[in-house]
Length: 372
View 1 (tube, helix red, strand yellow):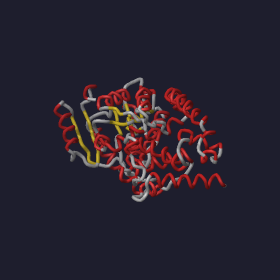
View 2 (tube, rainbow, N blue to C red; view 1 turned 45 degrees about the vertical axis):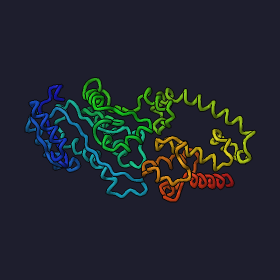
View 3 (cartoon, one colour; view 1 turned 90 degrees about the vertical axis):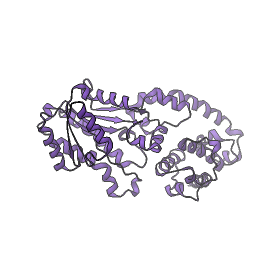
View 4 (cartoon, rainbow, N blue to C red; view 1 turned 90 degrees about the horizontal axis):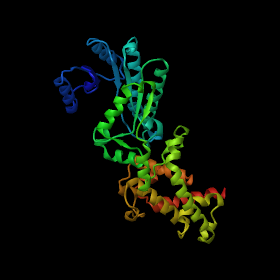
């Protein structure tokens, strides 16, 4: 913004200038000739927002707003306490409404009203239902303001590498990469923000990053499972078709070869109902159904923890491989999508349960469902 001529800045945040990086930013701006005010406050508190707006008015007309507040509290939705839910919801939901209401009468002077959202608002992330919901609200809120003739744009950022929260939490960064979400470095992030603040971007209310087709294809070629939920959304049909056509052709050929072997497969395969045989097509050589399930689960688990399958002992408890709540939730979702079997979350994180135990559980539930 300094390079675009901005010389007056007002920041508000709960920690004010306590953090070293915040102090460095303020110092750098002031050394560059900018006037900087810092208001300690919470954007979800309307009184604090009014105080920040007053500080802006003292410097002159308000040219633009960047709403970058966020809060994180992970957990499964079914066990998430109310306080954890609102930790993520309040800064984005209530904070954005507070800014909208406090700036009433200033909209004509605003060049931009930028909301830093996330790709998770569109495709979701395991154990972060609160954060995903908050970002989904920002995306809808930007569309709503836009429909009112007011400036607004929501940037659905995928993953920011080299700086910020994910740089300090590489485990979450690895998780997002496994889902096919592509990183932006600091320079690329600034370019996206610059685009969001500059016409013709003003004609759009929502911009997504992190789903670049060529980069996702490279991950697919390396064997990563990047067919995340957003690929099933009709709005991404062109992207999905571009990415998956070749992969589906390969999978179809492999599955066809597997199905052609069913007639000569082991006895257990012939006991599987025809409608369910396709799920085992890639593992018809397994000596038993449980072994086939174990092999399939091992392949998926290998992808989740970024470890070669031949280095994974399927008899070892999953927590010994560093399985956390997010990985467990993803693995549980995979079991359901693949076998339509609900594997208890506590079994996946149990220090007594291994891939073999989970395969036996899935096998038992499949047989029981076929007998119904």
